[in-house]
Amino acid sequence: MHPEFRSDGFGESDSQDLERVLFCFAVEQEAKFFAYRPGGGVRRVARAPLEGSFAQDPDHRLIVTVHPDGRLEEMEILITGVGRENAERKLHSALKRAPYQLVLSCGFAGGLNPYLTVGTVVFSTDEDAGLTPALIAAGACPVRFHCADRVATTVQEKAALWKATGADAVEMESQIIRAICRAHEIPSATIRVISDAAHENLPLDFNVFMTAEQKLNYGKLVLALLSSPNKIPAILRLQRQTQFAAKNLARVLTRVIPGGE
Image (cartoon, rainbow, N blue to C red):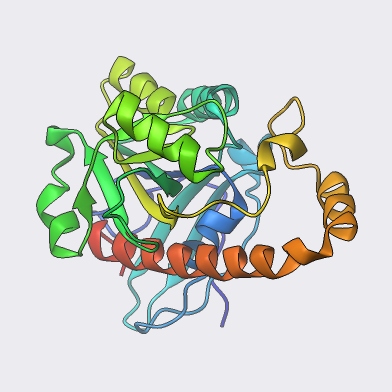
């Protein structure tokens, strides 16, 4: 049997203890293992854009899975795109369509603190979100985040950010997401996973391959790899790292959020 995809809104199932939670991810790769996780008695989830009130934004998805005991699991996922402007536009649009009890900024982060290794889940949360005990129990570490306008690609750049900001990890969307939530009096949290550590250079300067809309230009990326094939092993290694990191993030999220297991 397959999961059901509801078009009549989140939180209207027979399960009355589900809060309406919005999981925000910048890109698909960050959400991959959370949205499609098997195991734990849960049927494998497939992706589908919603109809009805969500049809205007295919990046806003409601995924409903039926557990063997008949319980429903509902997840609302918003793919915001990279950077502050994309996240601001997407979240404002989502908040116009529906109310939320909790908003989470999830995904990858670069390590600035040398003690944070790849795959470590890190967080910063509003006190009234009530997530800290569960996050710590799940193995996540409380940290300070810095929100940047570009990808930190070198060891030197990460070291400079750590010295200048005192932050432990860097990412590109959470600051605006959390600010919007505060303005709407919605509890929020940043829950991220380290995809590249402070001592690691990224194999390429990915900022060069971003469009004006902060989307990765895959054509330019392929041309760069063809001209520098010696970079391909490092790119493949980074891909393995990010998959490992995304799995760890999914594991923590499913332990922490009610209805997520």
